[in-house]
Length: 223
Image (tube, rainbow, N blue to C red; front, side, top):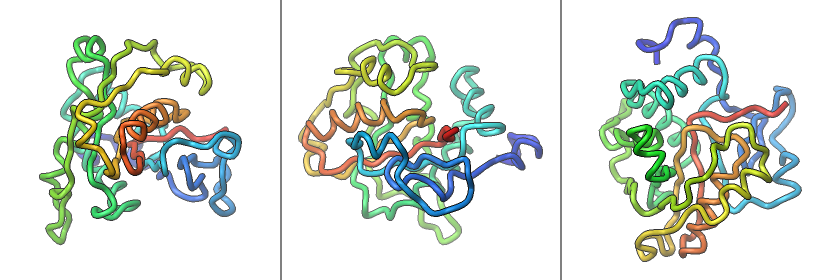
């Protein structure tokens, strides 16, 4: 991200690293101790198998995501997508995942924004190569299998229970036969409470998916 962010922003990047919740990936503000379940995961099981993020949603990463998402700075999608790919390589082996699905926008939101930031983040994965020449070419990135059919209210400022209610029945599966017994990786820009990830995972599991994991560029930190 060096060519796109100033040194102060890149120096302020905080990786979403341990100690964290092994299920939802929540990063604990105290940087001491071992990984352990967070309160929400203890109280209510998640529908997805595990969720991980690249960095904490603050400072330079927050600004970069906002510029892409709300200011239409699409040139940030490629470097942010490469950053996201490093997170995938850190937490998964390519043969653990069959299908990559960006979290969809409702068609109305898509028309207003003009693009789906989650799809832009994974669009260049096939072209990305590491120093050994091994990229993500074997992954099936399919942006049409999961569809958002309910124009939900903006999630910003809502707690997890209200977010879940807001998202009830919001997602359906196109061509369920393409996800049957498949291991799915959901990709999104930001993980806040996990309500969107849970709603998507629930629809995918109901449609026959074998397992759903979640990868996001950024993750809010517990207080």
